[in-house]
Amino acid sequence: MEAHTGIKKEKRRDFHVVFKEAGILLAITLIAGLLLGFVYELTKEPIAEQKRKAIKEACMAVFQEASSFEALEYSPSQGLQEQLAAMGVSSGSAYEALGSDGRLLGYVVESVSKRGYGGQIVLYAGIALDGTLNGVSILDISETPGLGMRAGDVLVPQFQGKNVGSFVYTKTGAEAENEIDAITAATVTTRAFTNAVNGALQMARELGVQGGGGNE
Image 1 (tube, rainbow, N blue to C red):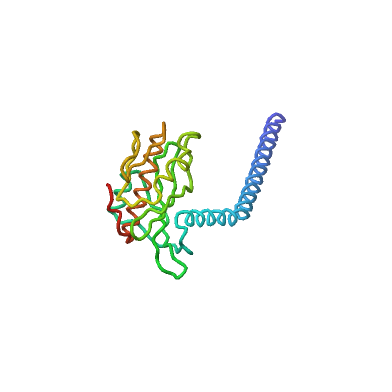
Image 2: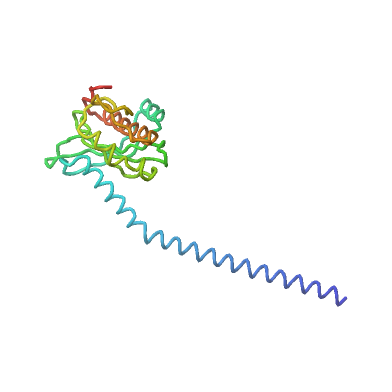
């Protein structure tokens, strides 16, 4: 009888230990969740502000003559979405580039390539109303250091001021207006970057940009 009573007491003690440990674990989880929520709320606005600043700087870099940029509610047509998807590209934000008098100068289009060597490549392209590509600004890239990460130095300058229908890359030296010299040993990055720029040009034309009738 005493042995039976001892077993019951032991079971109750085990239950209390398990219950106590579960309570401690629950308390730790709740405290951790509250702390994470607090940190998120604390950092949410600064992070958002940094993102807004980066976007504004990217817009200004590719459309220096514009005084302001107005966000558009734009989504590519179904047909264009399919074309972009085939190139591994998706659309992002789009902005009207406005002069100091409020006149429309062109558009800034966010284009995202999902086929970079190290992940996605996010760029902003400024396209004037006549189809001239003012410039390209990289917002996010995670390519191989020393190779694909040279896109900003090697690729970006080659697109500036061109008015063509689309670009192609070459490994033998660019000769035509629409040709871009590939980054040595970084063909994947070059292809992804070029496709993202071409996607931006197509989106801009759908928004109403004319021109771009050069070499295809």
